[in-house]
Image 1 (cartoon, rainbow, N blue to C red):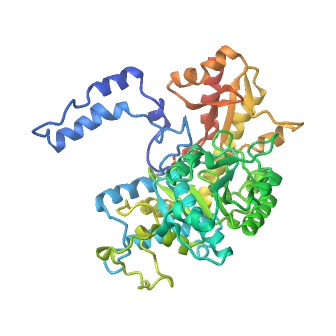
Image 2 (spheres, helix red, strand yellow):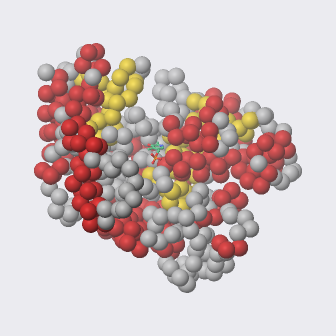
Image 3 (tube, rainbow, N blue to C red):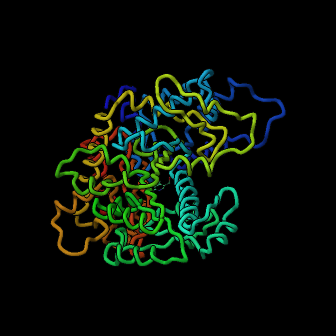
Length: 493
Ligand SMILES: *Cc1c(COP(=O)(O)O)cnc(C)c1O
């Protein structure tokens, strides 16, 4: 990928400003609303000189490995400036007035093409604020579908969106809705809470020896409970380890079970999704298996502000059930929002649904343009090359850790697994800890105190652990590995 923005890594020596600089910046915040404003020009100086030094370089620096953050490609960044400049509100499809909804639809179709998901099958597609919102959409559609399906099997017809969850449960005679998954992202329980399903409806059905993989026997046992409706959620790359919940055979079997028992199959592939661009080589076999069969899902969550490297915020939601999406999200009886939904644009032979009738928000930012721009600029090959570079760095970090005296690679794999096979399980996340307990307690703190690297802390098997998440488009394997090696060595001495 052509960097082309003239930023030399030397400008980005530090991923965080010093704590003093951050304190100074904080102290310069206006205390109160001014009666008489300081003016746009002075405000600009205030922002640049006083506030920007107090921000992190989570996106600008390739050495920020916290959370799964991603950067912003040059093409996505300049498109984002156009988004601000033109300030489109992408809510109603108005083909005679603006092409903004066409851009969104085309960008989403291009995303589908990138991921090898036929756009004509994923007609409920929309940009969201992020994977959390996409998971809310997935569960909302799932909730509608599974209760409609239960009623249909009883010879009835219901609408959760119209009648509400309580009434719908009564009509179907069901006791509850369960969400069956393995090691879910925290946002899944949040989505369950928001949607009235409850955090406790999320049930983990992982294997005892590999919690991230489905115990298919337990899954079927749970699904076969006739008093409970089910949504199955596949964690397609778990956030702590980057491990995948399924392989192709699992996905086929889970699809069959969901169809048999009237369950909805949702995949949370916030950062796993992009792995579908990888070539079919031995090097990526384990990763490709993890994203194989996603086309069998009812709905999929993706994050564009992670591995697609567009600016915050931008998530992706895809579903094969446009009718369910419209049932849940349409704005009823709002004449002023009347859309041109019966019109088709000349260039495509399907109607573009108004985004406000298939997603959470009504007024919305023109999030599609940076996605459109970055896909246009770098294409399928650019993204494949970028991800391969990120995986190479992650695997080199894992190799470094696995041969080091001071650190241990996590999770410890059960049974015998040769080192080179183990490394081929690594996607873009490297979980590890220091084997000295004292050092391990402050490991993340010490790494981040260098201000040169940033990693996230987590817990693994009841003890602190640290993780690298490689997600920035600027990754340079040799340069970045050298710095990591220096810092890890320095800290262990
Ligand atoms: C990051 C992440 C989320 C939440 O994404 P946001 O963009 O922060 O809302 C959900 N699921 C998974 C697997 C993630 O990695």
